[in-house]
Image (cartoon, rainbow, N blue to C red; front, side, top):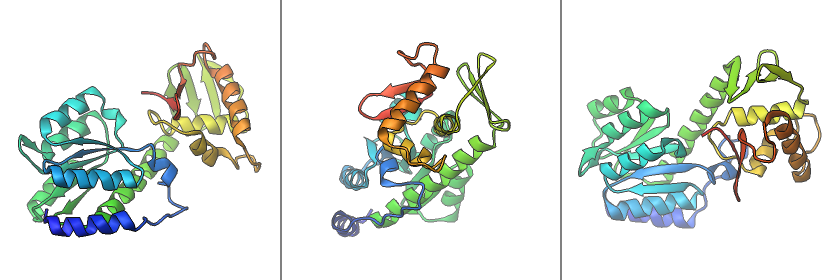
Length: 264
């Protein structure tokens, strides 16, 4: 990347706040819990990119080579919501990392490439990459593309889950066609708001959801305002109905200081 171009964009981005679209699926609250794996061998560029992403409230993990990235992905690929891969790395390339991650999980991938030719672009997109951006690029353009890919992926994930007739969560089964929930084969009676709360978790398996995120999703399900205390009550009731041991929940887990999570 041409560093003067990067530096000017970096300074501009540090001063100017990004646009806030209240109607967007990807809000600031959501981004706070989204983690990006950044693989870039140029340490100066990588540091600038990492800082810019963190300024946008993304959590980041930085790797400067393919080997360290592969090690992290082998440990826990599900922790990431998006990956930024430089195509040219000292010990490999972004293509190999993309293949590796797509075999494990359908996580969005954006390539950072210095070569803007049809062969490289088509090759990357064919193996499952969601987008690419050619160096040198402006930071604001990259951030915009990241948000666009995350919005698109979020909608696709929710649509896939909503289109499922049966969703299985350990010993709990949700029949979305009938609007019924079963535990160990026996039907469990849930209120409309309890059912909606469970569906929110089912549509975000493996993702930590803050209390604010949950409130955003369920506050108007019955046309009434749901405050933080009410959410506590509904969480307690839902666990009492679905958990084998509500005092030590295994289905809806508490992530200390962050929120709640269903699934790994």
